[in-house]
Amino acid sequence: MDRIRLVGGNPLNGEIVISGAKNAALPLMIASLLTDEPLVLSNVPRLADVKQLERILENHGVDIAVHGRRRGESDGGGQRMTFHAADIVDTTAPYDLVSKMRASFWVIGPLLARCHEARVSLPGGCAIGTRPVDLFLFGLKELGAEIDIDDGYVVAKAPKGGLVGARIVFPKVSVGATHTLLMAATLANGTTMIENAAQEPEITNVAECLVAMGAKISGIGTRTLTIEGVEKLHGANVEVIPDRIETGTFAMAAAMTGGDVLLRGARPEHLQAALDILAKTGVDLTPEADGVRVRRNGNGILPVDIETQPFPGFPTDLQAQFMALMTMSQGTSHVRETIFENRYMHVAELARFGADIAVDGQVATIRGKDKLKGAQVMATDLRASVSLVIAGLAAKGETVVNRIYHLDRGFERLEDKLSRCGAEIERLAG
Ligand code: EPZ
Image (cartoon, helix red, strand yellow):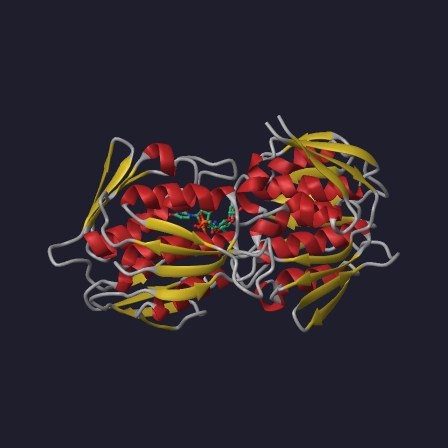
């Protein structure tokens, strides 16, 4: 298994080009199931999760093509890909494919809407919490679907003539359930209202894609989405938004190492809550024409308390990275994780660097240290892994991060991007 070796202590200086957002690319790819015409996506990141979803879509009969570089495009930029679901040959998403990535469960929405049936493996547990699918099933039933659980599969059938528009009031905000019900409702008969919908920028990216495909959606970017079902959707050309979690991660890495980095292509409005918190820690943030510049020159890191919340609040996907930053703050800070019940797997690993963190239920208390010391650590999930890389960049001496396949799921060319900014970092094969 590959590992990452890094030697901490160098401030990050330079420029990092932000990749396309994994969590937008995945549902956009899934949206291709809604039409028999080609959906062309640009700025698709090269990630293990994208590859895995390609396998799942191909199993349903989607033809996928990756296009070559065009004039004016930089090398290493996002991919342009066509997804063409001319004929859906199989409405089953099998366990061995779905169990590897939770987002693949979301195919249930478009399959049910277009083919009136779907058989999708339950996604199973995950390192950050139990992550049930009750909200998906609730929403699909509201649209008239009949749902059975059989042998670990969700077997869903639409009424004769297809799904029927309805008012869906989610008792809890869920990104995945919002994506899925939004997609399902585009082809339902009549009007659907989704209340208490997630408002993440990735939802907006998908909703705008669906509109480009001919869907009728209003309230995009708000808590209530109204979808007037149409008979058919068509092809479109859509760009994946820049990854706000990658942006926040590198911003925290620059803050932690005391560097000066331009995050090119970043959209500050997609992570304003996190940037506001970073500013409170004493980091200079300057919006630039095409991104945001993050700088901490010489000053210490101030302790700040955070609580994770659905968008527009502080994202749970930046909680581990922020905690890494706080391990070197000049005081005591608190982190409250409200989205996932078990998203503190990085705490024990950060302790290997000498960090002082105590967890009590949802709340972690972090007492900042002057310095961290490099260590052997193990990645446990995607965002936890990158928090260990950030800590290692600021720690004295050598760090080895084991089990980095998690990183490859969600960070494109991580070592390359960091080493171009002066980090001493390399991948050790095997
Ligand atoms: C998405 O996961 C993201 N994944 C996650 O990013 C992110 O952490 C999460 O949203 C929250 O922002 C993708 O976009 C691919 P949820 P999702 O449904 O949709 C509970 C990463 O590292 N819930 O919004 O699975 C759930 O258990 C990943 O890139 C139910 O109770 O998250 C959680 O407590 C990790 N019943 C809360 O809702 C359900 O049916 C929010 O989860 C569904 C969810």
